[in-house]
Length: 147
Image (cartoon, rainbow, N blue to C red; front, side, top):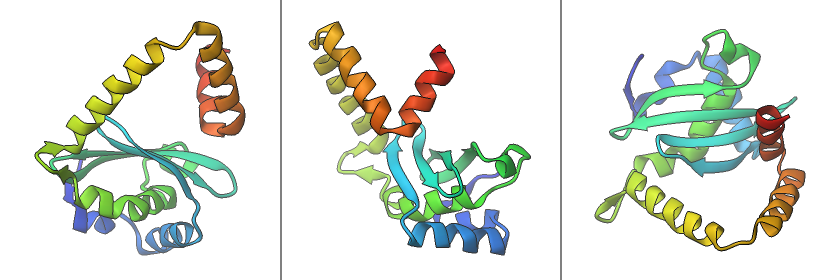
């Protein structure tokens, strides 16, 4: 697995793939960018919606995954490039204050868990149904795991 500094991530992509990724980024096709414990994930909207996950270690792109057929064959795809363009500034500023973004993410995750633990179960189900109806990524995740 190749590890590149953030400013060199473009070297992973073939020029035409990088250009297509830039086009997706420029038209605003990258949605739902969320930090994860290992990096970030996003949805890239095109002919279909594709989920992208980027793993960051020590401020560098460490690993990438996309749900599109091109990436399933082991290639770096335009969806990954688009997500990286969208998140480039965030990843460059991987440290915020005295805490890393991973520490801040874990703290916010714990705070969220505390708030959620106080919500009655029937209300949680109602919220989850509403979120799944509004967000294709959440709906797909629920249907894939629990149907």
